[in-house]
Length: 296
Image (cartoon, rainbow, N blue to C red):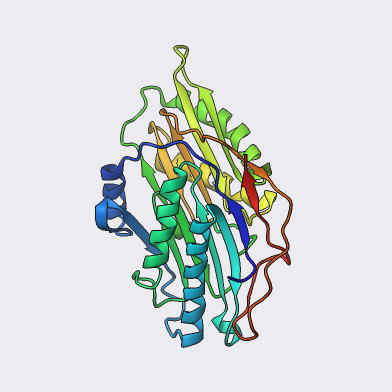
């Protein structure tokens, strides 16, 4: 594997995933494909991107696949890497991320499944792709997207809880207070995610929230992405008791049930990258060093 940015995954508490609801929502937008054991994958690609992929581009995609498997072996939760080989148009910019509300073992299984399915999804002939799973996100493109938030409405979807809250105005006020703290903290966090809670009613009904960005985004871009999600929430599902908002660059979730993480990650010293592969098949990260975040 070439130089890449790896963050080791924290141990995260188990979540309750409403799979039938999620599948129903995804089927409505004709985005997702059901896999074995009830898993699903939601591939998205630009129909404007070239489908004229040569052997060099395909080889670089397979090297991204191998990096996903390396992530599993390292218990890593984030990767962004550049796989260069062949002509400039054959370069693959790849990113993978565990969602912070996923159990560590479940995200490892998610990344392993993504590695297996990467060459076979309906977008596999295209030069760009985003794969959404319940526990992880995988993305690649032949143009660099690192450091810039993708807030395109065409490349995001919502998974709402169908139950409406009895007092939408109170819920909205509580959610805005929670977002005011949580989004800023997530953007400032080295791991680019934050969990928080907010009291909604006097009988201590708590609203739990998660805000997460891909870790390549600078603070300003993470803030911009999450703010875009908040604006989107108001139009899609503002009075619903829970919602997951998914995009290529950030993720926002609110629920009345708890899904807090177990052990948060802590930053570790930078580690020098491994030697580069032979010329013509090189892989390089967005920086000149490999970053590794360990967990306490």
